[in-house]
Picture 1 (tube, helix red, strand yellow):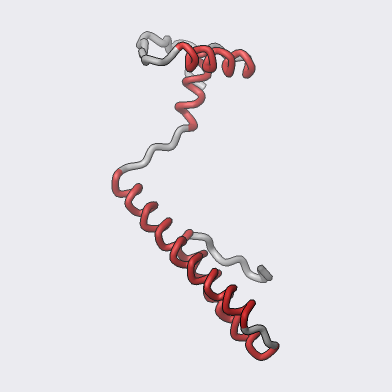
Picture 2 (tube, helix red, strand yellow; picture 1 turned 60 degrees about the vertical axis):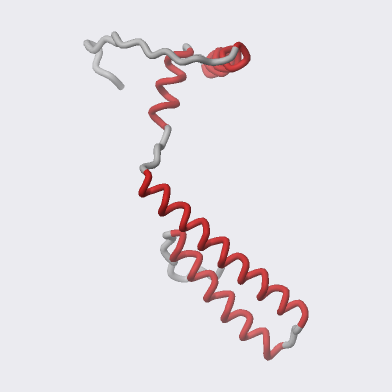
Amino acid sequence: MRPVTERRTVMVAARVTTAEHAAWRDKAAAAGLSPSALLREAMARTRTWTAPAMAVESERTRQIARIGNNLNQLARWANTHASTAEAVSVIAHLVSFERSLRAVAGIAEEAGDAR
């Protein structure tokens, strides 16, 4: 919240279509806000990416896709060659894939997590 003494004196302009403007007004009215207040709230919640951060996120997405591809291949193999003895091997590989996904996604493993 801004201090009571601070006044908003800078105006920001943006070109929008008539439909975009109507949608903006409708969203603001539904939220019980002015279009300006809606914009300020939306901008406060907006996360921007630096070029290096975007490159990291793109690489992370590529790695997750590769892991997903390997997982699909493993599932296809398991459906074709299912047996009790091989199930242990499949489960071990699945655990390995889960650890890889967690590492790439930056998710810490939870102790006792049975998933």
